[in-house]
Image (tube, rainbow, N blue to C red; front, side):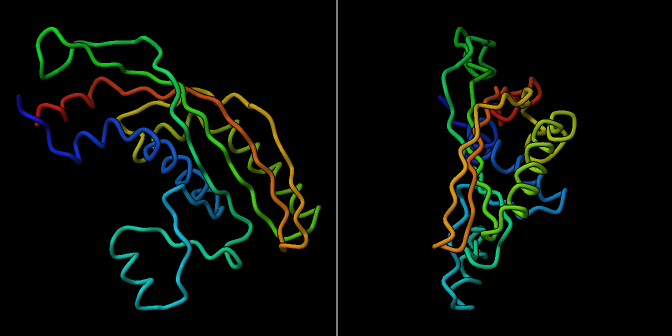
Length: 184
């Protein structure tokens, strides 16, 4: 049994990263600070922060990066869509899963600013499908239309922020041309 290269497996099956990074890239195209669950807080030490960035981490400055969207995802159950495995005869591969995104919107503690930002993010999310599926790393995957799962506002003026959590449901699928990565 030959196992494909780790990065090729991740290019297909790291669905959380694929979805979060694509959504982050989409927001960044609109000029919005966006971070995935992979972001970590900066240390404040320039040399240590440079080393973290060199390792591929995105650094988040909780005080400076506002307004911002923080993106977290959870993969749900498979949708029962299978294809023959490209490497093993008689084996099938799942190709589509439910995915849920939690978007945490963080702004200065000003209700007008926060409401305007929340409205902009909601507009962008519900206008995303045509654009987001052409962005890296979704070039081998497809996100269906987002279904709004609700909004939970949290005012934290004592912490210097207003926050809203938006929950989005979708499905993510692997496109047919991606499976060739498992044969290399």
